[in-house]
View (spheres, rainbow, N blue to C red):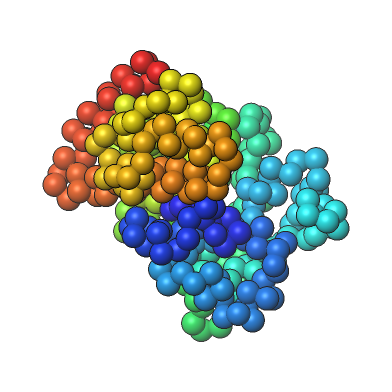
Amino acid sequence: MPVGTAGTVKAVPQDILEDLGAQIILGNTYHLYLRPGHALVRKMGGLHKFMSWERALLTDSGGFQVYSLRSLRHISEEGVRFRSPVDGREVRLTPEDSIDVQLALRSDIAMALDDCTAYPSTEPEARASMERSLRWAARSHARYYAAGPDPPGGLFGIVQGGMYAPLRLASLEALLRLPWPGLAVGGLAVGESEEERLGILEALVPHMPADRPRYLMGVGRPEDIVAAVVRGLDLFDCVMPTRHARNGHLFTTGGVINIRNRAFAADLAPVDASCTCYTCRNFSRAYLRHLDRCHEILGARLNTIHNLHFYLALMRALRAAIRAGRLAAFARDYLAARRGANAMA
């Protein structure tokens, strides 16, 4: 899912997202809660209408953003209170508040509010955080499905438990006492090693129901996504393709390049000769570097188009490999090529 934090995927209008083949994008509950406020979005008919996006929308719960405000927040059983980074006012976010905002946004997939476990954490700290997330999940579920007989979409639960596999399995077991149309794995990509992350996925995902989507939140690099798909994950979001693009880092089949490097000043080749995106069909590395050095908005847009195309093409290739029964071979070859590219970078 391309990330549309404040109701927009940065630098790219909605028609281009459609042309790129984006089937679903992510909106950020926390940011939309602060600005423009969910009451206004509700008045406009929901986030789809507000931002003129007819395809699917997922809204996160705001839990991860609050987690990142460590110096500005206070967590209690009620929920979270924090100082708004916009105007300094105190803001409350409880499980019920998060669901009310997401119901106002009318997203197709909403997320239960969770307590994102810090990394590193001791086992008792991770257990306390996980158990709080479970209590909040039950409150989120009750609020979402008590809002009416026909909610706008479905609510996903989030498995927590830090780097402790037994806690992850306990979290999953408890969540499965309630009906969820999908489940997410949260609290990863927060500083842990690749070995730790894959260890948690290998212990957890085989026990997650295979008849509903399994969402790995906040991941990540192309090779991380491929490794996760092999282990049974289905749905991903990350700011990396768009944020990297705005900072001149472009994904290619040969690895990530920094378009700001002097080596590209007179390079007339496209970003990636094998890429069919609008940027690569029409513009050179030299031109993209020129735009970046001049701080032209077009540079950010063209870079973002390329990176999103790269990611969405990877997802299409993964789906094709699954349909053809070649996922293991595809992943082996892809990961070997990425390791080789990274070694040469």
